[in-house]
Image (tube, rainbow, N blue to C red; front, side):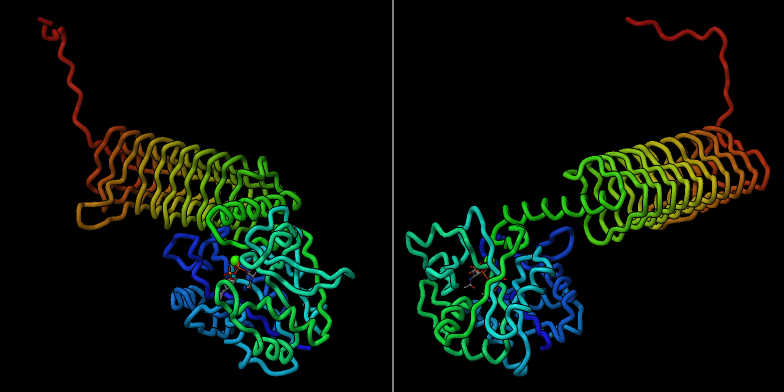
Length: 452
Ligand code: UD1
Ligand code: CA
């Protein structure tokens, strides 16, 4: 029986108090809906249908994916009504799995078990939650058979204390589901068509209702308000950090490592506390990342040392480079093998060739620095004339003395030396010494003015 997945994502999420549609709120740097779609794809369905409505176009635009069938639910009249928007697009004889766009951590394993159980009847995914408030409760008859789901709003005194909840996920053959949904009404406290009412209809039709229990409560935790999203984010990050640790990466504190989007880490890497990585981040083997580093869209080779408090964005770093502490590496930078970038150095759109050193207190922007060249402490490339950006090109084996300014556009030839404190406004030929500073005068016996 081939599978079609319906993801419900039309709700407004009023309790998020946000203009962003709920399913676009990020978890681990990616929209909630993105997590659900990834899990749905792992089940290899024939098609995925997403019911969208609130914030409609924004939701569609966030997922530039032609393989999804988008179904508009113009008015949000309930989860049953939402599923009804899609059923006309699904043939008979298919297995339909309903997922919720705001329940991001559901596991493929639970869903596979649910699909298996729903092939000839109706399967519901349930869970035991210590605090079931807000969820639909699962009611069973004395023999333990599921007989209905009572929504939180509808639940009477005894029912409210039931801790077994409906996760919202169901699986059933398409024609059965269509039949039940055509009979679901909206006579309830919210005036909505509840998907959950199909359970009692199945029981009435004497169709088997099977329940599959989710092992881990986090797998079925939905996002209805900000605090739930915040707690899910922590759970998600902890899981990712522990996964890395189990693959041989040293994670000094799994509660203080954040990975957003795609992150790939080789073997024998180490992360100290409070590292944030915003994908795509890829690193080879034996990369050590010190405390409080932020790496955003960075590709790193092998044997790299990134010392604490460095912020690196849109940069490529070669093997055996050393960066930081307190380095700021801005977009467009390429750092070759064996380069040293030291403390309080800002690089922007800079290409540093093999073995180059920029060790202290420098700004190197729109520049290339040749192999083995040394940029002394406090060197500034003056790349901006107030209107345009200009390039600085330093050849191989050059030495730029401390506290020099290189006024771009300017070229420093290979093997050239710039004396400390120079302001360089003209090109320096290969192997020359350039001095661009006032000559020192010493006035013998000079007296400071006396204090009054
Ligand atoms: C729903 C279930 C409840 C379950 C809980 C689990 C129903 C009636 N209740 O309640 O039993 O315990 O989820 O999280 O199904 N949606 C639409 N269109 C609509 C209404 C909702 O697409 O008209 C979508 C929402 O975007 C959301 C999902 O359906 O992704 C669930 O809707 P929500 O309003 O959050 O339902 P709950 O009250 O949480
Ligand atoms: Ca919900």
